[in-house]
Amino acid sequence: MNGPAATRRWQLGVPQGGQGKRLDLFLAAAIPTTSRKAIKRALDGGQVFIDGRVERRAGRILAGGESLVLTLPAVPDETPVPTLAVIYRDEVLLAVDKPPGMPAHPTGDGRANALDRVRAMLGPAAAPILLHRLDADTSGVLLFALAAAANRVLACDFAERRLAKTYVALVVGEPPALFAVVDRLRPGVRGRTVRVASGGQEANTDFRTLGRGPGFALVEARPHTGRTHQIRTHLAGRGFPLCGDPLYGGPRTLILPGGEVLVAPRHLLHARSLAFTHPRENRPLQITAPLPEDFQPFLKNIIEPIKI
Image (cartoon, rainbow, N blue to C red; front, side, top):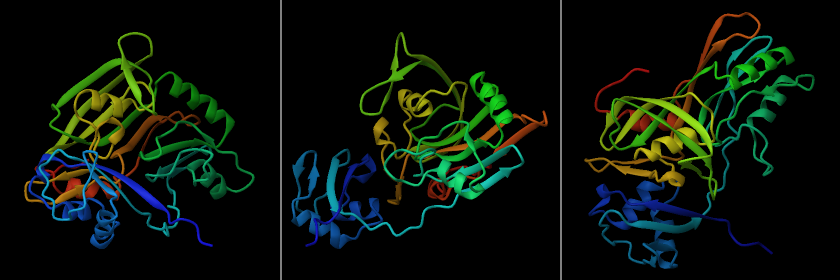
């Protein structure tokens, strides 16, 4: 006897640019993995809610600003586990370009993770040591030590903030050309990090705006501390949440003036580079990861071309 079909629950905010669009067309554009037929079945089955109320009309015209919740059949994941691209390797160090959606370390839910993949890549005799962490949906440079001496040196460098970390983020709004955030952070509820007036831990990030599009911007972040969700919290606190970061108020969809819908499949944050002194050779080393594919639709709509 077959069990119940797997489903996935979606939560979407309709941006102001969605005003005047049909509900079914908006959903089809915002969720490219589904079809209008599946959306119609969800509407007929009472599985679509607008601002908490069931909506069954495919042709409902949106006003902009609505909150949408819908349940759709889950799409079977037949995509192979992403390959970790090696971007630097020598006798004592290994750096990979972690893809979005992959945890940096084992999480207990059976998902493929970067540490186990690196162990498999290097063979049973290797003992790679993960030197820092990235959120599962954050892509980019992830560094491992391959020797105990290198681990001791770099662990100290991380603790003493002697490494220069550079991230790039796609954010909502119009941030200033340059800005900085210095505050205090502590763990909150439901996985959030919150800003506090006292207590917590000091957190410090410098930001630079690299380019602007209609309603969004590409921003460079240079964190000087390493608190959980630091960049996400700092940007949201200034009113510029990451595209695709509903935990901190960032929408998954943006509608451009011409009607094109941009979809952020995850929070669009990328660990672009790490710069530090090589632990054995005592030379400057900078490791850089290229921007991932899910940044490209946004970058194509930057008003002024940029190079990073």
